[in-house]
Amino acid sequence: MIRVVLVDDHALVRAGVRAELEGHVDLVGEAGDVGGAIDVIVATKPDVVVCDVHLPGGNAPAVIRGVVDRGVTTRFLALSVSDAAEDVIEVIRTGARGYVTKTINGAELLDAVRRINDGDAVFSPRLAGFVLDAFSADLGASGDPELDQLTAREQEVMRLLARGYAYKEIARRLSISTKTVETHASAVLRKLQLSSRNELARWAADRRLL
Figure 1 (tube, helix red, strand yellow):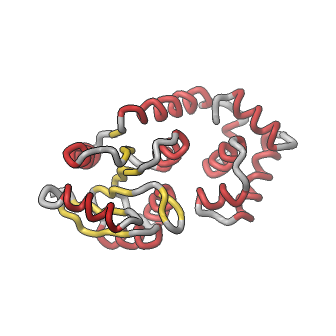
Figure 2 (cartoon, rainbow, N blue to C red):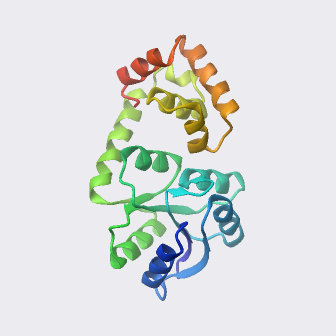
Figure 3 (cartoon, rainbow, N blue to C red):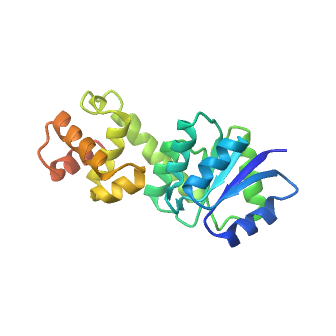
């Protein structure tokens, strides 16, 4: 049976998902926040993690990065009430294999878990377009000598800065300190030879990076 960890900060949601999956998969652990999720995933090494996007202490990307940093490889399926493009794109760019909304029924969720375990990518229908758009934008930016100057983390910070997020919000989303965000922001502007966030926003928009 597929070994699954369930991560959601609402006990009632976990109970509902558990009821739908029990008997079809081996539920080896549950967690309700980022720290607890990382610990249980590292301890149990599941095949698939079904993870809510917004959690106490951070978000699904923070869980994914935390697990990777501790040397554990698993597949993530995001399960969220949010269908916002920025949430979908951030989670997938961080490494999740799929993203479905909580309007999904039990049979569809079980099918998604099985497909993720088999190595497929799974998305709720209207969310797939967000991922395709983001992928196309990335292809369009590949080989850009200016963009290639930036590290992967600097590119993450650059996109959020260009979208208008404050340093504190970027720090929360990326699970890093505000001081680290400031350092990355300075490096981005210096490397791109830009003098302000407004110039950065125009630069990113011209390259379809927003």
